Length: 231
Image (tube, one colour):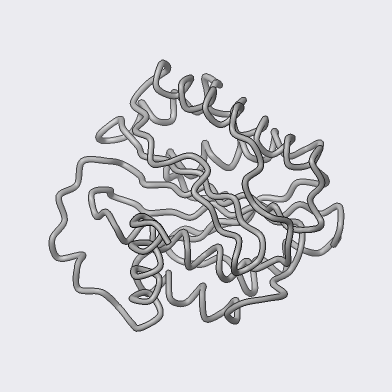
């Protein structure tokens, strides 16, 4: 296990042990730290994976996302992208990247678009994905808001109980927002609302299928970056 993965899993253990006192030492310089957690489980084929990555890249090329970043107090965010499936398959696909305008957003978009699928196909461990993302957020305390943006087309079927993972992150002041892709399970958004999302101003966005993912992730990112309440 390399040093980065050791640090992440050590922080994950702390998430499960209880609330942290680290928030007292806040040196805020960002409006948002955002983890984009992308479903790469058995139910996601290569075309569907590509639609997720392309949708995210297109969103960061858009005027809407760049404008949302520019409207913040610090006009600067940090984003990382995680690919996940089973408890044993959680990978940082794009490391933390600072975005403060059109050029840096476009560079992030290019990196996302060029990033291959890194995970082995496996079960749908939403819970491990949340804990992994939460551990990444715990490594830094320099943002006004810390958010996990998790996409999935199925329910949690392996790893920690999903409610326990959700509650561990919420106890740390982390918000979890969901993007439910409904082509496998028509009422998945209801499952997300009950079991997955939580924290301050949390919300879920629905995509009817993967062809609608790009539209859904753009809308979701604008809301997350701007910090506007969901109407």
